[in-house]
Image (cartoon, rainbow, N blue to C red; front, top):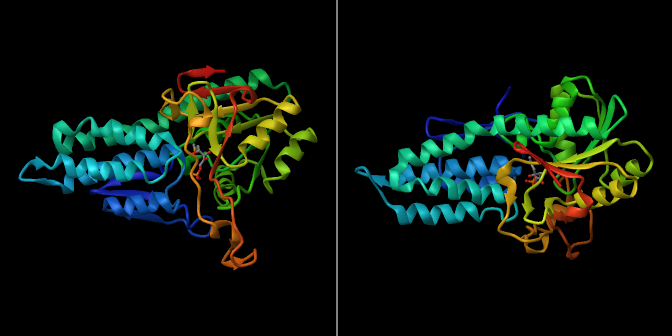
Length: 328
Ligand code: MRU
């Protein structure tokens, strides 16, 4: 299937997620700073995708800092730190950067080979996690075809290809099991309205957009058989950080006894953090909330709380499903 990230002639080639749904265009990023900028402004976004892009950025750094066959390891390590810090919450970014950095003793070719391995693995890992999650959904839910609810964008755009929660929806839809997908617009940056709507239309899967606050109401009204979301970090105790708005969906799902399933690759698991209280939640700028489509929607100077993610406690989660199976 179409790939959202690639490596071509020394550049990271990525679908520009800021341009969708109006324009489908690709970015060609040749420097570390260009990749960091793309990650910070969410042109490349989604936990697995920023991990792959981060690994490739370290490969760019290793190549740029190699003179006469000798790699300036300290300079690459400084770049690696800046890349890993571009966004704090999704552990996939630091996981991928750390993984390629361990290959620095082999020089720039070894770093690139490892980054390309991460890129190449992504689709298979997503498809395997999606297959495991689809099997679980079919076991837990009696109704056919299924009415599914998802949040944010966890599809091919958020990964290299296929996706995690949206990959599960693709897997279920391919088998003819999906009646409709309901999804929130995902304020403030509209990953649901702009990206998930675009992907579901591209895949030919029936879908309906709602405002974020309508998701819990839809669950309470019996309109949803299963909630499927992705993750940015899963702690040792099973607490999950994901896009802001996930927690309220989990609460509603529990209240209505609807399965709430998290789909993520193993690279999203962070056993070094005991609980969700230890996760650094990215806070983003006020104007993402006070300005909508270039128009101010709040009085000038209004103070804003704009966390990019929230934490869903493990006891609200039916299962976390990875390419290695389900737990929870
Ligand atoms: O701020 P974003 O758009 O990068 O947030 C993305 C999410 O929260 C996704 O649900 C998560 O990264 C999983 S993507 C497979």
